[in-house]
Image 1 (cartoon, one colour):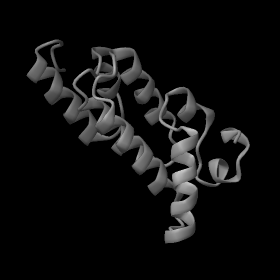
Image 2 (tube, one colour):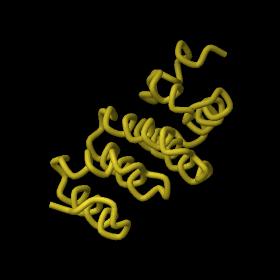
Image 3 (tube, rainbow, N blue to C red):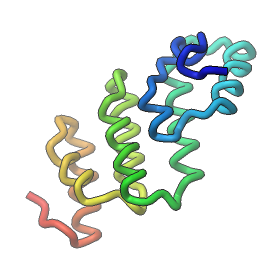
Length: 129
C-alpha cells in the first residue's frame, strides 16, 4: 500500500508530514480504514487525534528532535482545536525541548502560553515573561 496515494490517507486529512514524523504507518492506516467502515465517524480530525495521542503515549522515549517534529506537525495541523490539543500534548512530553516551549509562549492561545510558562517555571530553564 502506498500510504500517501491511498484514499483513506487523504480522506482523513493526513499529510506526508504525519509520515515523516513517524506518527502514521501502513498498519495504523489499515486499522483506521477498518474503523471508518465500522463506526462511520464523519470527523477526520478524530482519527488524526487518535493517531497523534497514541504515538505520543507509546513513544515516551522520543528524543528532543523527535518531539520537535511532533511540535512542528501540531503547528501545521489545519484544524485549530486539534492543533491546540496536539501542541498541549507535546508541551507536556518529558523531552519537550526549550525551543518548543519558547515558541509556544508566542502562540495566540492563552492556555498554551500559560502551559508553556508553567512548564518553564517547573523546569527552571527559562524565565517566564
